[in-house]
Amino acid sequence: MFEPSSSNVLLWRCKACGKEVTNRWHHFHSHTAQRSFCPYCPATYSRIDTLRSHVRAKHTVFLSNNHVI
Image 1 (cartoon, rainbow, N blue to C red):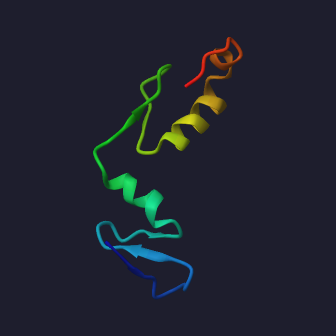
Image 2: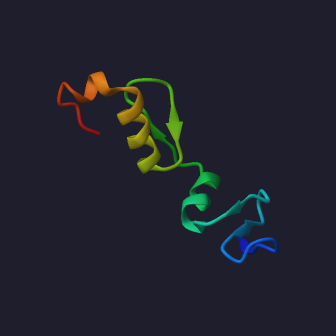
């Protein structure tokens, strides 16, 4: 699914979309159907760590009331 980038030895080019990335594992998940849903708004993410960052940045009111995801 990936090949070495021709422009930078630290990057990999995705054969599915052409994007150049440093972390193949993280990017791979952007091509899967599995989604993590925000419990507070309609946002969805392909990675749980991105969802957690979203909740911390956008929904701090809920976190201050001891809601944990």
